[in-house]
Image (cartoon, rainbow, N blue to C red; front, side, top):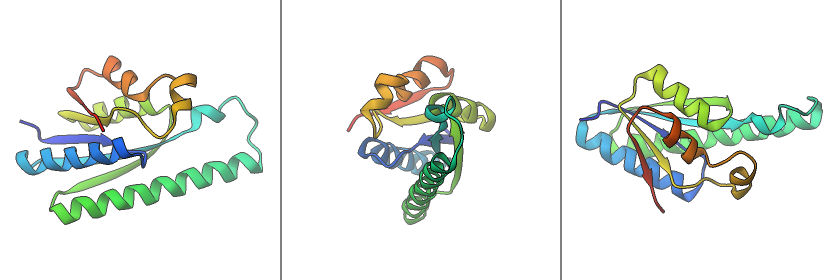
Amino acid sequence: MFRTILVAIDGSEPANRALEEAIGEASVWKAKVHVVYVVESGLFSSLPMDNTLEIIYSVLQKEGEEILEGARKKADAAGVPITTHLRQGHAGSQIVALAKELGVDLIVLGSYGKSGVDRLLLGSVTDYVVQNSPITTTVVRS
């Protein structure tokens, strides 16, 4: 039985399917859903912060807010209560940390995200969460 579910989204098709799965599970168990979007700022950490990077970060944050709003609408349409979270940092570690903070029973993730580059540079976020989280994690394949 799940009472609190965390789903990570990034606007990709696998993440959208993960959101649908989380909403479905929440409907069955009458659970609360937390949705997180992480602005992957780790890519920029070694670069000096100038106007260009501030603009890029601002665009990524706005994209995250829009994606979270879309998730809120889907959950509302299904009658499932959700709380959204916008984080920054390494996506995998932010997801694991938030799951622990919230005391979730289940993490739901897509099998891969928007960027294949992330896998090359940072490793798969999904793999990171599966390897580093003590919480039950469901990986939804697209």
